[in-house]
Amino acid sequence: MINYRDTMKDKKRVVVKIGSSSLVHPETGNLDLIKLERLVRMLCDLRNSGKDVVLVSSGAIGVGAKVLGLKSRPTTTSLKQACAAVGQGQLMMVYQKLFSEYHQDSAQVLITKYTMADDTSRKNAKNTFLELLNLGVVPIVNENDTVATEEIEIGDNDTLSAFVTSLVEGDLLILLSDIDGLYTDDPRVNPDATLLHQVDEITEQLLDMGKDTKTSLGTGGMATKLSAATIATKSGADMIIANGEKMTILNKIFQGEEVGTLFLANKDKDFNLLDYMKE
Ligand code: GLU
Image (cartoon, rainbow, N blue to C red):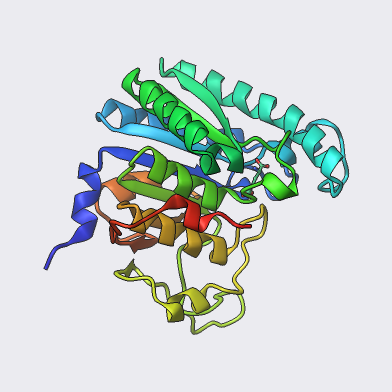
């Protein structure tokens, strides 16, 4: 029997998504700089080992709200967009400072649903990604929250990162979250819930399992992670959901340890990204 965990070290193009809850101190909502530093160091090391790396980072709205001194997460579209404009810049400043400490170039790529839905825009975005990867740059991706309103937004970075994985033909997507992986039930409610280490096929029953499990911050819950898993695996990539509490989890993944939940690639030759765009 193949031990799929042993194949993680051979992945060539890896997309890592970090959620808002893994980026900040839970007590204050301020950026957890030590964690970010560790994340960036790990990603630089993956680059040093010869892999292409793409980072999908949330946090623009939350960071912006903090910088602007708001007491709670904004609710109106214009305030959210203003926060994203401030926060995205701040996030990039921190990321580029940290990446440059390891002499690693990084770039900002902001995407809307339109980028993915329109054939020409999607092709251009793909070419840009491939050019950046060719140049050895780490693209740092987020949704363009400053202009994407409800009608044209992808809405959550789990889905966005799966779209990006498909676009760049990545062979592994890692979702770093505040949960250890996919459980048979919500572990916060049911103490008998057990962690699934490997999912060979995404079934209706499995999609049901994740339906109500929320993570604490950000817009993604288990449901968006499972929909990301469907997109990523059908486009030919493995996907892992793992707990981003400790960034050493990335080491463990590439050393073949059985951490998180691994969803095996199940390439669908008829896969069409447009089928997965929410109306
Ligand atoms: N794009 C949003 C942000 O950067 C995050 C979306 C999400 O949490 O999935 O604030």
